[in-house]
Length: 343
Ligand code: SF4
Ligand code: SF4
Image (tube, rainbow, N blue to C red; front, side, top):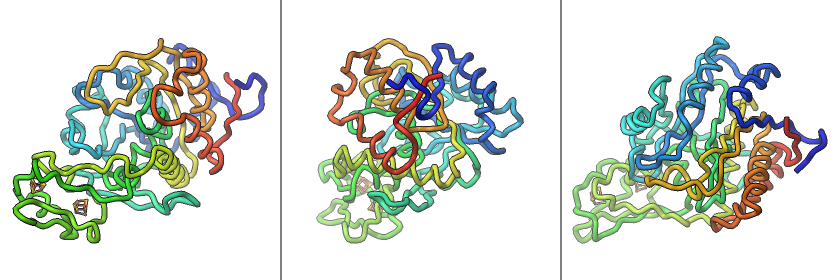
């Protein structure tokens, strides 16, 4: 860990009010404009270790107190769950204690509202993100830091890049191949066929079948199938490709918002897997505190270092993905510096 003043500034406190006070004192909120999206993850139903709503409330009140319009923003998830559609997503958020602020699901009722923005020099040439980002001019990326089965860890980049991907974007990051249909589960109800804009699905021998040549990867069939018969091709991207695509998507969004993003990582309730898991998980280590920075690479590196220090190097071994891929690739793409100093 860097102890000198080389690198980017990362604020750290065990007390969230103190962290906010320090950020305010240092004018770190000045980069935020008039319409601020606070990007967070409300937690899948069944998860109990998602971001503490009291932390989200403190950020919302801090941003609002500065005369800015603030909303919690998210996009729908790829899989079938409690956050697959806009209304279910909002209901889950309210149930989890986030109902005190405006909640804006950016990719429409079923993830159909997608906007393509360019990625500079990435594994992908464009990022498919929630179209509603156009309503915002700056972001607070408020992330619960934890492990992730394929990305190694989920922090600011995962929250930003994967989280603001539309359903099509999320499929794009996870795989280069089309979804496919489980014939055992399909009852030929026609719902997917009627919802596929490019007529890529037809009934073959009494079951739905996707034509890979026609499929454009919008992922609508996954959202609408009442039988959960449309399978997501998890693993279509390797873990390393997935992590790099998350950074590419983050890169596109950082460029879109002209760098007007403030990042806060919450190192509490650190679990092995992410908050999309609809199950109770026990924390794998004790709470560490809260970090903030304008530099997402420095912030992620500092978060990793603090967790690794506390777990004596055990955090990198909990999932089948190296924790260094995201930060190394992001630094290589010029999104920030791995060197930092703690304030
Ligand atoms: S929506 Fe699901 S059950 Fe209905 S036809 Fe399509 S795959 Fe089969
Ligand atoms: S992913 Fe979209 S384009 Fe492809 S089959 Fe499903 S609904 Fe059609």
